[in-house]
Image (cartoon, rainbow, N blue to C red; front, side, top):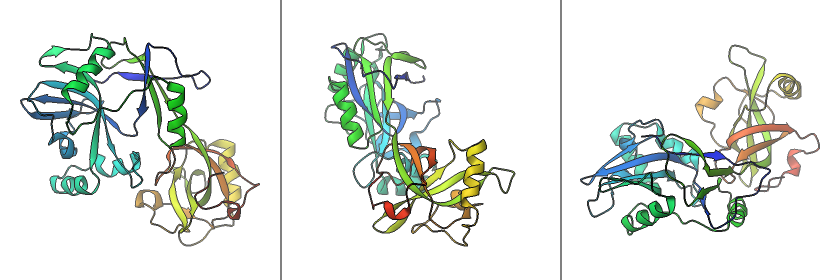
Length: 315
């Protein structure tokens, strides 16, 4: 079975209101349907791949009581500041060797945020309304290692609160919604936050198969410890934008990385390093993470210098 998906809400429209709607935090993780039979757990991804071995810290702690369950939820890993961070999660996503998985599970423990119940003791619940499924979910997972995140009546207030806290966004759901596996429904509406910040260019990468066509920037954030690497930005760079940026970085080449921390090899390979003097604006999902999430280039800030950027403060 594939999970039911939410439809992106209109950014120009308000969050739906009324007693027929509830609102949840949109977690910065990966979806997983989790089946429990006779105390054994099997986790599958959105594409129906078995991912149980990747998350022993979830699979090894099923709910007590021996009940037959099929749960929908999100696997998250918390960063040092206590917020979900997809970049931290990525350190674990593709590791399959048991010994390596065990070490990562100890260092970067995962949490399974359970938000829907699709089967209970052999009964298919997908045709029941969300209000009933959620009530049963709270009952069967009470006291378990799989938390059930709260829902909220005031979606607009939650939207503002999650934005202030640097969380990914919110999901609004109709209480009468049935669960439609594999479908993207307007009975579930998601709103992801986009943030705009100013970052320092420390390098650039060419388009594959070329040496001089600029395709991506490597950017960093001014911190108390110097220039900290925040990621590679390729979205939003093409055509005229690429030519303008190529002209801007010309003459700024240097031999080594200007970032104070290590740049992952996958990003550093093929990069031309530049003096950290250019400032660009970038849109991204979420804030406060070690790496930018789904960054998109928005423009060169000729009105700002690196000295204008205060550590930890985004323009």
